Length: 428
Image (tube, rainbow, N blue to C red):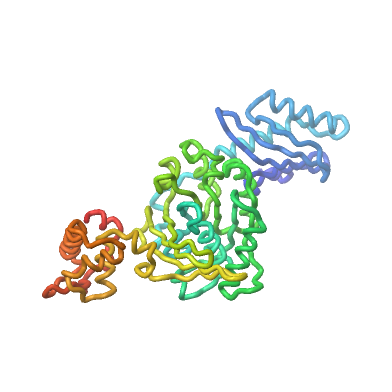
């Protein structure tokens, strides 16, 4: 039969253990439970009848550690006066915590798992729901602004056809290792003003962080549970790993903490000197959907931002995206742009991608003029090598059934399955 005088429950990242002993209510708050080398350590605070008694960090798997803890409690509230068997209480507390901590997630029969028929998006086609999304780019490319804009879109449930995005509303926790609350609040206000949401009271929760995500995870879990958070935004990965982006252990600890926290996340990070995703290969491996960000223009009042989908696991790679940012007095206006009309995106498309996009936009297109059109978009001369690349791309698009050639005029094949997926480009 269950002991009704005892209650053990999970609260946020920790536990609350309550027991009635001889008319006294003894409550333990257990947090920061960590296990290493078969040693389970935790932070434990004891309250009796609402009165704080002691706080300590005992090793719960150590006899000497528990002995020291219960003797400390016995000195504060002697058993002869309070009739509380501290030794027994502490041993029971340790056993409950160790068993719960090591239990982990329950095992499942795969036949019982309900497989969704559609992909869940937080912001379609940019952020997958329930997944670790990553946004990377060089400094000043606008990636942090994009991440904050996504946060505002979720928070306000804002719908604007100019954005070309489908947003699932939800509450956002913005974890900031880079700036401060005043700067982020100012940007949120300006983004809201840019969407004609002047005066909207934001529901975004902000927290300035100083330690690594792994070290902050317990407190962040409590915040997630308290505010019913739907998405985490982490800005940025380098500091959130403790500065160890090149170290596999630091990156793996970061993504392990992210997985434990659960839900949708967007991690913002940087490029290295070569312009590639900075850090350990595990950043690429652990991110479930990864977008690269680049910008065009150095104007203080306006820039174009291009995004390319570099990696994904559960859906096909999405089309390149382009957004224009206008920085006005007291507002930031962001709107979707045709990628082909954005210099930063058009210049970054491969020859096969450009061939398909040009035909899709301008069909019918004379085959002999395609090399000239591709050269224009790439901002380069119409060289012999470019002509050869364009000719090869056309032939393979035709053979794949994506394009059709009728008397020297190219058009989209009416029975084509649509725009080729990213993986198909690599064959050209």
